[in-house]
Length: 407
Image (cartoon, rainbow, N blue to C red; front, side, top):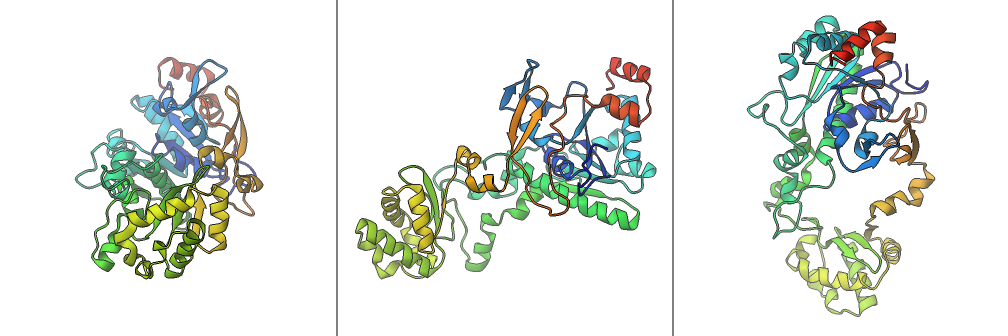
């Protein structure tokens, strides 16, 4: 087994038949010690071309996203469209604990590899399916993406400036959130399988994951106060003032919720800028009192922050018990002394790219530590190891399958 001796999931085998939507799910499990085997079509998964890419020593460009999302996994090639490929998949699944898949709903069933088929040979198997809209419902067959899920899950409705159209969230937050939920759900299903002796089918809809965490859409504000939320740029709808404010050397994010925090902020603005208007009693009290004056107050606060450096604003805001935080760039995150002191970033040697720095553990176990066991695999890197050493195929059979494009 490739997993480390202290991995929380050592001894568990996972088959990953997943693209970008599910790769992070497999990574979370692999970095905890599970033996995650990534199944790709011969030639490699399309996500290997996702930019940005880096030039490898082999002359081939490698996707940085792929290298990050697929650490600690083994990789084999497999064409499920061919009967011999499907037979190999069934053989692998017969001894696996979990299958993660992101194919269109109904695809596995159409290949004769659906959950009911697989459980005939392995009753304890858990199958986790991640799709845009889930395995049932009128939209199950619709194509999706991170943007589609963000829009139809409601999150985009309140992201951006009021006068502009809704804005897509940075990165692939819908897919990463769905993959994280899929990993947690899979572990719960595996725990149940261990006790009951029977696996189950876990159905993850990316749209539902977004909808379940999109409290920022303002439903609560509507239920509580009858107010329909709208986009507020960098600010929060229910917190006035709030938002990103430029300083002399960067930006800070400031948020005021409580009356005492407003009093402290108003006094700070007055002391530094001499502004008398901000002390007007009409601004005091809860955020709703300041709601009509949001843009007016933003000008006063911007005047204060434009005179300060980020570190000055952060420290002084903290001293005054105001919620203020620096807005870090990617470069600042990479140099963050706190992250460095906790050893967050990991150095990983890749055979063709060289040494790269990766984001590290998203959680810490005191007894079964997380770690990156190996770099992301190259296409079909572990074909011989898995198919010959573990499934018992001969070298001659392996060559025949490779020649036929099965693996």
